[in-house]
Image 1: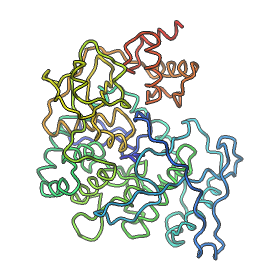
Image 2: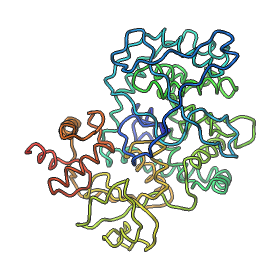
Image 3: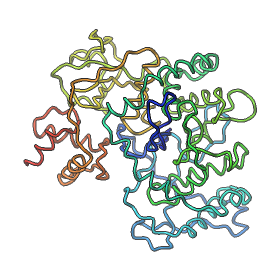
Image 4: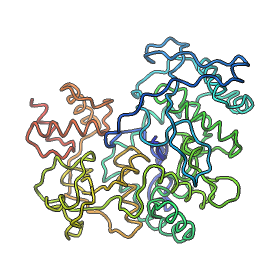
Amino acid sequence: MRFAPFFAAAVAVTIALSTPHDPAVSGGIEFGPTETPKPKPQKKAPPPAAPLPDAAANGVTPPPAAPANAKSAPVNATPPPAATAAAPATPAAAPGTPGRVSTKGLPPPPAPRNCKTTWSFDSWMRDFRREAAAEGISPRVISSVLDGMTPDQSVISRDRRQGFFAQSFLDFSAKLATPNRVTNGRAQIERNRATFDRAVKQYGVAPSVITGFWALESDFGAGMGKLPIMRSLVTLAYDCRRGPMFRDELKAALQIIERGDMTVDTMIGSWAGEIGQTQFLPTRYLEHAIDYDGDGRPNLFSNATDIIGTTANYMAHLGWRPNEPWLQEVRVPAQMPWDQSDLTIKHPRTKWGQWGVTLADGSPLPADAMPASLILPMGRFGPAFLAYPNFDVYLQWNQSLNYAVTAAYLATRIDGAPPMRRGREGIPTLSIDEAKDLQRMLTARGFDVGEIDGLIGLKSRQAIKAMQLKYNLPADSYPTPELLAAMHGG
């Protein structure tokens, strides 16, 4: 899921095998483009916590200061310690251990994919052990889990690739929002009707929304991953790209083992260290996993009741609004103010209707004040959706716009919506190399598009809109060969 978010691992094996397993996607965090609305400014993180009294008495000290620039750090330098933030209060229905890390909002930005880990693993591990002990994790658990642990280079390689997210929305959604997942989602709702009814009453989250995530994350348990989670977490915490974030996840996983929920041997899952059938990162599990069937322990690997209750609990924490829509397919006119199609812009449905936007069947939108953003994942010639405030929860679960829209669309299909209109045939798309070329030119013109990786995220889309306005092109924020040619021409 993700944090994470946020805050990725593998496209689950589809039950009917019509969708091939792809090791590039899954889970609460998406490691590719970040196409989310602008986050609110975050408060400056407090300094690392001081050692606990008993730790200090035993000579345990906090890790040394991190180098200012990981790329230029000496070989034995210590990587940056994780930034921490006050965790939001745990809902009353969630008896989990409150976490030290916020499980709302966006993860810290990653380093570029070509970053180099210049510190030695042994020195990093010594410093991490001191840090974990200073935060109260017992020496017994630290030793039992981390003794003899080594990084897994294949995990780092998977994190660097993430090419699945470079596909167009139509290709991406066709592979993930399959008819089999619609059918199996409906079957899960019927099979667990009493639990879903209870979750709706307690948290207000629709069964189709939960089953949409459940299907995409693991195909209801068929594709949770088969790697040792602790080794994956150690690897990602040591690596330069997302070290601070995964130091927190690794510590949370140690706490999960310490409180007895799992053992190292039962912690089996995705390469990104996610847990269970809806792929919770350890910080999310620690704070939001609940024992929804009352058998004494949360079980997100095989207990449908706990999976449903925990997922609903987490979504309520992210701000889910009961009895409100999340995504709705619409039809757009041939001409309208395209620059208003932006996740950061919301208008009442009345305004969208005045501009000629209708329901997908051509009937008028409700003439009310419900705020919504217009999403055009493939530009003005492709599918169109109104995204409501609940869609923000999808973007906190996973930061890829393609993933978030696909998950939200799948939920509407499970609820009975017809297949979406694919728009005009032959919608132009850019290759990865062309997208990188576009990003380089945008950067040369003073725009901050983040990493030049060919993945068109929020920053790139905002810059694209600005250049479309400059060249008097329809400002739908969609990268086209037309814009690329205009920029090459000056």
